[in-house]
Image: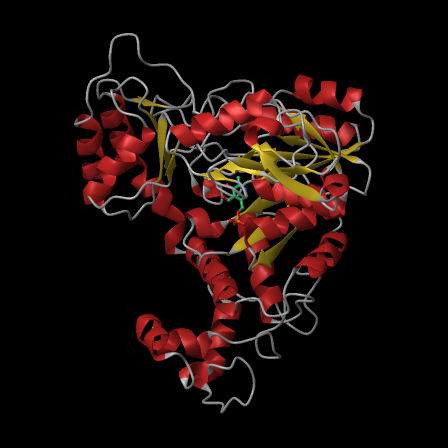
Amino acid sequence: MSAEPLTGRGAPPADRAPLLDALLAYADRGVRGLHTPGHKGGRFAPPRMLEALGPAAFRLDLPAMGATDNTFHPRGCLAEAERLAADLYGVSATRFLAGGATQGLLAGVLAAVPEGESLLLSRIAHRSAFSALALSGAVPRYLMPPSADPAAAADLTAADVARHLDADPRIRALLLTRPSYYGVAAELDALREVAALCRRRSVLTIVDEAHGGHFKFLPAGRGPGSAVDVPVDLVIQSPHKTLGALVGGAWAHFPRGSRLDPARFAARLNLLQTTSPSNLVLASLDAVRQWLHGAGRDRFAAALPEVSALRATLAALPGVRLSGPGCDPADFAATDPFRLAVDVSGTGADGPAVERALRERAIEHEFCDRTHVVFVLGPDDDRSAWAGLVDTFAALPPGRPGTGGHGSGAELPEPRVRLSPRQAVPRPTEAVRRADAAGRTAGEVIAVYPPGIPLACPGEEVTAAVLRAADAAAAAGLSVHAADPTLERIVVLTD
Ligand SMILES: Cc1ncc(COP(=O)(O)O)c(C=O)c1O
């Protein structure tokens, strides 16, 4: 583990990028490689890919080998890179992941919850949390969001968590999604209180901070703050989402005082990972860390005035509302300033209509639901895209009197769990006509994607509310992930 002292080496200087440097050094040595990968550093690369990516990408696309370390038992340049990332975030250990936050969540839940014991988790969890349940054999206990509006305040309370812990003494871990895909985060004080409660009750706390890798770099009071600074046990982030790593690059942090044994996490991770992770992706994590140690660190803070101005301009447009409690640009304690969730329910357009209008201007959003359009902003975004965004919202048709309010088009049904995912997933399934599905037990995940929050998971009753929510989402032009996307047939467990 990267937490252990690196034998025979001094601590690497933080202005170096040990893994990226190792790849560059190998490529520069002019070694004639009679080893994988088959593209041989570009000599045998498909010509169109070579032209598209350039030769350097192939030269650096090296496998796990002595020169590049390995992700199963990092002891060399990867361990050094992980150590430096841990120092940057002020945690006791960090692991690099080439398989996204998904990989970290899977390993975290497998390490934290033994089969048959319970996991308390937000129902707004990403679908990878469901995969973690299916793999681990953990029994889900769900924390429902307090509001039907997916972009409303997170309102995490220790009292809610305590109620669940009282109801099920087998709960071994709590998995929180903070921030949500809409950029809404439980305030750090609330998280601290919940973490303290979980410590008292011997329950581990895992925070899915996939969208919050940059929180650490926002000035105090100008962002929600990062869970790495709270005594939780594991924080998973996707630097590929907000920090500039290549797609798939994620990391898992063990905050100081974490009760989750990194070796136990590593053993689970090693069940899940390939022996050939992309070193380009891993090196991009190292490069992000190096950059954040230096010039990159202030980029988010420097862009805040412009982001605040954009938010204020949008909030002043008729019918347009910025969702969440952070409508006041000065108050980001529970809202990611760089995540815009624009509520258009007070205009004459819905989310998919805004999506079409944006595409006419060659602007692409992150995702929309029926009433919100969500954008991921970055410090160096093309400001003409921001201007185009203002113009698009300014040109929306006016709302009819009385419109407004919320509704994602896919309000989250309360799950009725009949079987744990592990019990349900291996069972035989059949696809039945929609009219015959109500009351049966789901045999597939039905989710609106993005954001990928499940309406039903295998083992849960297909209720009328699930079907209504799926229909509403499809009718609103949103993409419903299910085996049959038309929803004419639903996969259920064979009785
Ligand atoms: C809240 C949340 N957690 C986890 C993930 C999975 O992240 P990754 O794509 O890095 O595996 C996502 C992906 O969208 C997400 O939104």
